Length: 190
Image 1 (spheres, rainbow, N blue to C red):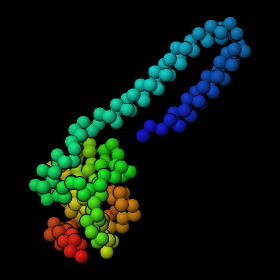
Image 2 (cartoon, rainbow, N blue to C red):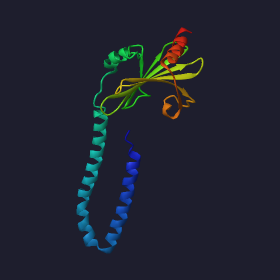
Image 3 (cartoon, rainbow, N blue to C red):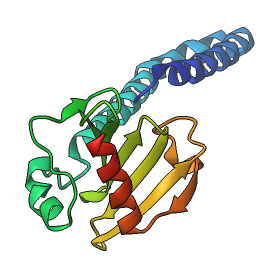
């Protein structure tokens, strides 16, 4: 997200410095100073062009990347082959948890099991998909991670999770696929 505050602050400091320099130049030689004022439109044109170009490049970057913007429904075939939860109408898209390279979906399976899906995009397309299973009765967070580039599945449990979306800073305990399936099945049956 483009924040104009730091840019305006730096621009105002430049204007103060240039103002002081022009004032000291005016005191030194008034004729030379008045001839120098003819260059201000050129300077302001360069600054305006720089601001416009920066804004346009930032907007173009957000519009273009990721290059492969597959809809998540197109990935359902790969999900079904690898036993991942498929996206359908029961999943709710979460705009607040999503960004340019992260799409977040939430589904309430039951009172004992809450499922969250995060799809991570790179510049060229989908990189990874994370399925978070929150077992509400035991307060355990299980993660099923699928790497689309290597077509490999990883299972683990997050330990000491402070913020749910900040999983990278929490400890991981690897699980086997059988242990993972047993925990999920037990939660769904309750």
